[in-house]
Amino acid sequence: MDRGNNLKILTVSFLLIFSFAFVELIGGFLTNSLALLSDAGHMFTDSVSLLIALIAQFLVQKAGGRRMTYGLYRLEVLAALANGVFLLGLIGYIAYEAVQRFMSPEKVLGPQMLLIATAGLVINLVVGYILFRSSGENINIKAAFLHVVTDTLGSVSAILAGLAVTFWNFHLADPMLSVAISLLILPGAYSVIKSSVSVLLELAPPAIDLDRVEGEIRSVEGVVDVHDLHIWSITPGNVLLTAHVVVSDVSACNDVLRSIKNIADSYGINHTTIQIEKEGFLCPPSCPILRESEHPKHHHR
Image (tube, rainbow, N blue to C red; front, side, top):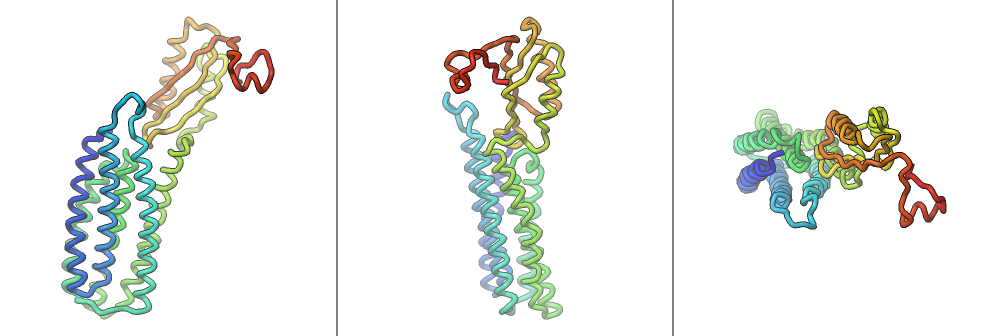
């Protein structure tokens, strides 16, 4: 995962979106187009989300110090969560504007609106392509990509509305398309928020079956028991595993560790921490579970 490249991607995307937002804002006033003004608002919101992602990515890359043992990777997840919430707000705004336009449609300058909306579509397609290439490996860029998808659909909506107004004088096309856009964007916003919350709650990634992983570790030759098994993510794609593994012969621990590492690799787990314990290992007297159970022998099983 090349975070330096991600920083460049976000910087270029932010500059393109932020610059053209002003163009659409001016064009919206000149053509009296609520669709263009709405799309300009979308682009400004997108530029804010990209700026948040850009700052988070910069801080993650520059993070250092002994206290930051995992860096600041979680900032990516926090920024993605903020972007997902922004996206839901944007959907609400689109729906509200759709209702207003449905009740009181206004005349616009169709040809000029088409020209500006088409230019906006080109900008969004360029930025969307740039972000899409990295959206699969970085949840923060994925959230930014979904914002740009929102604005791309907004530009398409403005173009279609301009065509309908220019050639058929059909002013209700704009609110109708806005409602359709809201319904298309909602699943993406939900996906970003769900993924972010899952990482922050340190849930096991949905693609990994914890019981199956534990079963495969137990099947390794020399392994007697497995306990305190945890699998979670620092960021999506950066998965960790920790476990206590009881073995019958500690002299074979390297072979056991190698086998467990191979199992973890097969599930896309890129960091493992395994505590090897000899059969019969007892907890120290300071163990809080031992005190609660008042049992002289306790193995955390």
